[in-house]
Amino acid sequence: MNDFSLGGVREIDDIDGIAERRIASRSIARMGTSRELTPQQSTERSIIHRSDVARPEVDAFRELRTRLLATADGNFVTLVAPVSRGAGGSFVARNLAAAFAFDDSKSALLVDCDLRHPSQHTTMKVDIPRGGLIDYLEDLGSDIAPVLYDTGVPRLRLLPVGRLRENGVEYFSSFRMRLLVDSLRSRYPDRYLFLDSPPVNGGPDARILADLADAVVLVAGYGKDTPAAISRAAASFDPAKFAGVVFNQGV
Image (tube, rainbow, N blue to C red; front, side, top):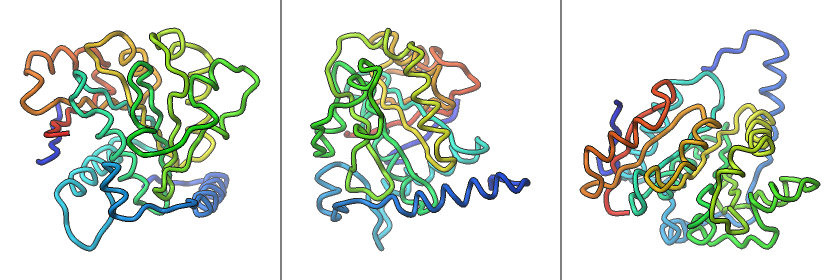
């Protein structure tokens, strides 16, 4: 098991691949933001930001980004799953996505998959007048673009939950959900998806979402989740996808 602590090239050898990457790079370059957050606004939203001063929390997320990139060829979908509620899974998912968006050649999409207790749009202070994930999944004739929201962080978009639902099993295991994830990833080869999961010990949602992901990052509350609880949660996932544990302190 790999341990991470907070507080603690792709090769292209064909012409089509080169062309695809150039097109994607131009698309990402155009992916601006209507209101880029100031450092103070980022702090208020619990989002890391770049600065001239070295900060341990920013370096920690950059290190985690580097480790994930080293394990994959091309873009990927990462499930961020807390062991228990209050472990800080949403904090880690949000800031890991922001760390990927730091790179001008990459874009990130954060998908809030905690149907009972969604928090990303509230914490990030994003108005969601057009709904979100559940609205899209329930309306077969809808388009995903209207519910991908600007976050104020360049190259980072948010897909919020939208309508609240008690159980995500039927949504996350649906063909429409799988098709959505595949489409969001494949449209741009430099887009990285981050699924903010409900707690592993709260039901089957995290395990079902793991089927849609290429990598799983488990978040344990430092001093909150016991070694036994962490081991049980880790055992819920395919070892081939399991990237490691983030020990999160104080968030």
